Image (cartoon, rainbow, N blue to C red; front, top):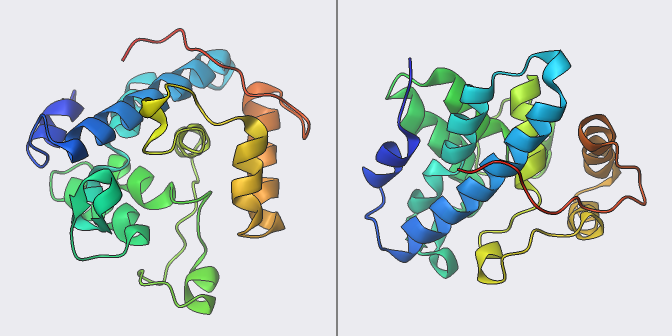
Amino acid sequence: MTIQPIEIIQSLYPPGTEGYEILVSHSRAVARRALDIAMRLAHFNPDMEFIKEAALLHDIGIYLTDAPTIGCRGAYPYVCHGYLGRRILEERGLLRHGLVCERHVGVGLTAQEIRAHQLPLPERDMLPVTLEEQIICYADKFFSKKWHRNGKPLEFESVVRNLERYGPDKVNRFLEWAARFEGIGQAGLTKAGSACEI
């Protein structure tokens, strides 16, 4: 089944609004990087169409959160946007896409972490499991919602520094993905640019 991610976004975010522009710009950047990575991993047979669709939809739930700096004036804390996005997409029959929404926050959360930090989330594991989920989660870390203002992805070292405040296990998971997806070691540099048009 082919879906139209931008049409789904437009059903919730009025085109031309700040929230719409930020979401679509961010999501297209993530999709481009995710597809570039997936093309280099063709021997694993990643689902390219799914990656494109799910990357475009991974942040669909942000409008329900209280994040006015990115045009979102909802009631929920921002950390909730993943599971809220899952709910939105599951209501449309997009179960796999919904899991990407829920599992991309940070580099994933365990039920134990949710409980220990008393996060306002359902108490269940929210970790990227499939190759496609991991690729999208990894690619997402390079683009803040405001990245389009200067047009540059975050440097590899900046992503690692951002993750350090959440613990060494988060950094290690990201570094494992970097090595597997892009051949980047601990001292690696971000590969800028993209061959994919989204």
